[in-house]
Image (cartoon, rainbow, N blue to C red; front, side, top):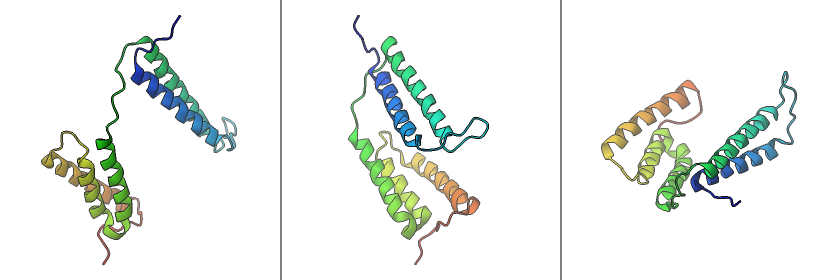
Length: 150
């Protein structure tokens, strides 16, 4: 009997989940497990890793039985602007403030969208920036400047 992969996307995704769960379980191995009634710091990561591995194995096995999509080619054009935007946000958050760093993040990541529209992006971005300004410095009290400090 030969093993036929009917859904390469499911098999690959499931195996990635199993690998990530294995790394997380390995990292949590040095932490004290404790007991169910008195959980240690390693209890939750280990249990969560096991659940993720089970789900990943289930997805991979499903890919052997059910026909599905092939793996799409990797699109660097969409990944690079996102990585650049995250890097710029990290570099700009202190000197430029939360609002300007978020505007740069929004504009650079919007280049990656295949169906980019200015109006929708600006409305969504304004709401997202307002939410971030209310949540992080005001409600959570994080020491983030909202505007640049001169």
